[in-house]
Length: 404
Image (tube, rainbow, N blue to C red; front, side, top):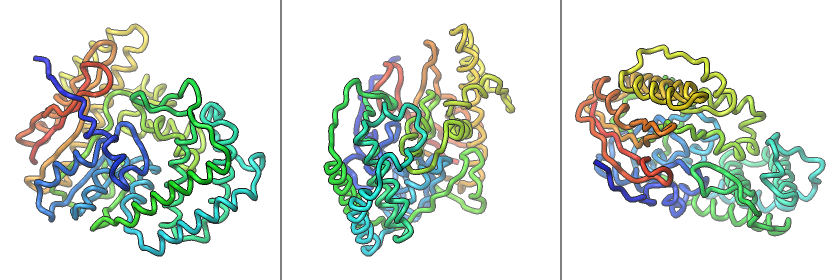
């Protein structure tokens, strides 16, 4: 029977654009703070919360704002930095220092010429930014690096957040698709003075948000969700998370402009390596490695059937995509196995996941993951449809709930 769902924009990143620190950086696949709040409100304040796929820090920040002790795990070092910046407790002095430093930077960057400043090695960088914006970004980044030692890390992070917001606003990037693309014609034309003013506006907005501190500061850890190391000894009562979907939308591809400008990436090979380490990643070198990848664990019957149909559906890329699907579920199985060691008896899970489709073959991600949770000792496992996604008609988001 066909499931009738609305798009429910309030459960997407769009809702975060109205929520202070949650809006500091846009990541299209992110879910909303509202979705997390609706689930957290049913648990006592002593509940220990874990988000093993931390992303931009939505779960950890919302939990901290509501007074819940929380731990976030994320494999991407840029997202780890962003989550720590978003969830930090800022002092008034740190915020004031950031504002004063930012004001100084708009003057300091004029000491540098564009030709003397190296932009990051982004391929076809002129496609991203016009000459004026590229000159502003390179001189401002140089000024930040040259003077950062004069301020505390907390103050520096607020300025970097404002700079990161300028990276996309001044670009020709468009987010009217599931992943980043480019506008056919440039929508924004700013001179240097206008760039400076917009940067200061972003910095003041960020500073205002920083004054509203969470009740607690969560623990943010850079780690692989398959091993969840080094979480040994920590026991959690509740998991609220959204793992990468099995749809080949790469977080690295989505985040690469930020990661290059802020120094978390230096070349395409490094990006490919990080995407290969991430669950669901297939960008760059990860694609060629996937062609030769072989499963190390028994393949569940439902996964094998789906992979077989994908393999037969396309004469050239069917094998690659079949491997992708099998590897995705093997990685998620490893994650679930490790997760069970870190949860208290009776702990509950809320996993927000999306199904996917390759060459007309529907991958029932929610059903397969629900079966894996049941296989690993979770009871009362259920799949609840949440919303229709803004892409193919058969693609939806679901919530997997259960108790250990």
